[in-house]
Length: 293
Image 1: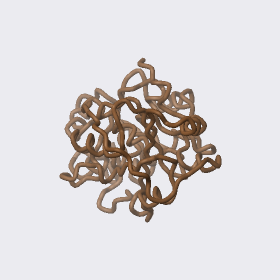
Image 2: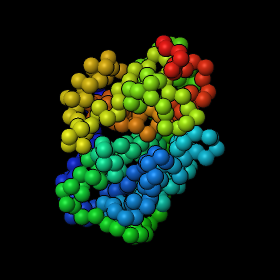
Image 3: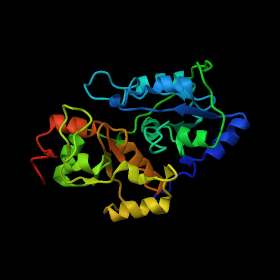
């Protein structure tokens, strides 16, 4: 099994020490994102409160605008341009976080995965995110951020970390990879509605369910240990010596499953970018309320 890098997950104490040390080749990015029905605006919240020196990566804005699906990956040129505007160079160690109080880690792993898709491995997720940072009384910034120098970031697309609609169709037939869905059990089983009213709940045929919240210690709001995560995957029938395909509602929490596997040593989990939103709209091979597999 390929070993994950030791810096995939970093602590608040480590990041605080780096800030005191002057950052050097470190760049911090806020990747907070919230469902529309929450009424929350991640960019506005970033301006109100953020980790010092952090830039804001807008998951919805830096996306493919030519498809009618939420926050799909942008093309390589667009990503390189937008991440460069945030002052990121190829030799930077990027630390990503979000401000999700319920889990501590939520949308940050989407940016972690996106950076890896575009060839950048020097990226870590802040364990516990902004909520843990604040609980520990660490310094925060407010107001407009200081301008950063735009940098030339060279991106290279790794197709092996991304799955599309056709890939999932093919996988249903050959069952080469297990598909793992990060949504809640109710949405997966078709007993609870999807957040998007025009999308039925249910799941991709032959997929299994591991709720993304099971990756997080519910009391401490931090990632579970690699040992705990390995047990979680094993009890769900996932052999981490083989990569799997992660999916969810729209490609956000699937990245958390990919990250959890990465911390256990499996670096090659692919994310189905369109996820259930695309599959439910496009495929006749869907499993939902009235059709059980």
